[in-house]
Image (tube, rainbow, N blue to C red; front, side, top):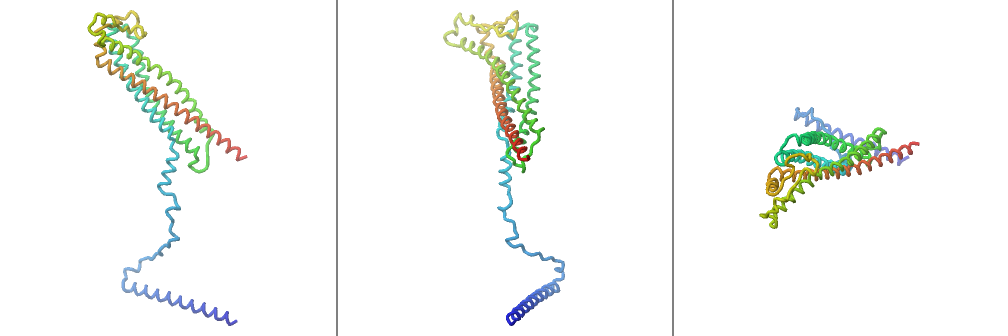
Length: 305
């Protein structure tokens, strides 16, 4: 009994000491308020200890968020979009100006009669309008494919929580895969077609180089070196003159229209090639994403059952 009584006495002594400390602290605070009346409304807040503070390493910071966002960027689709925009811009812009210069060369030198190249002029004008439509379509299509790439990449890598996809989303992805394949085949034809004027202008330019060469320059055989534009089928055989020889052909090669049109056709052909490469990258990216989405959707269905 004695140890228990001693323990109770010690606890009573400690409680009385705490009360004295608390009453002494209250007296000090009351005296402070009496000396400084304006401090009565001041609220005292406990200072948080180190254990109450959140560690900066425990919550994700800006760096972790940036890494997560960069992980959801479809880099293949981004590169393909930049390449597609550049290729289409080069093809449409340079091709439009080069076609106008070609019509001017034909009217001034190879076909002086307007009725002989009237059909060609209408076709070139129609192609120029088609170029406007191609530029607008691929601008929108590139943005849509880039957005679809962001969606599928985020879904594949499961960046936003639990993996979720719908049959409608997979159907849209499959539609983009099919449409990209069709456009890729079509642009292969456009790339081949854009090489035809480059070949024609190269033949004319190489003939002019032969005329300028020291072996033929100043000789009587220069006037026998000719270029017949009618053999390419762009103007009819009854077009006059249709064929240019010698020094007259050299003067055509020295004109600004010929120089600019020749190099613009080369750049337009290169732009068409860049667009084909961009569409090939789109094909690979969209096909891979669609295959992974389809596989994960089947896996998700199997886990439910």
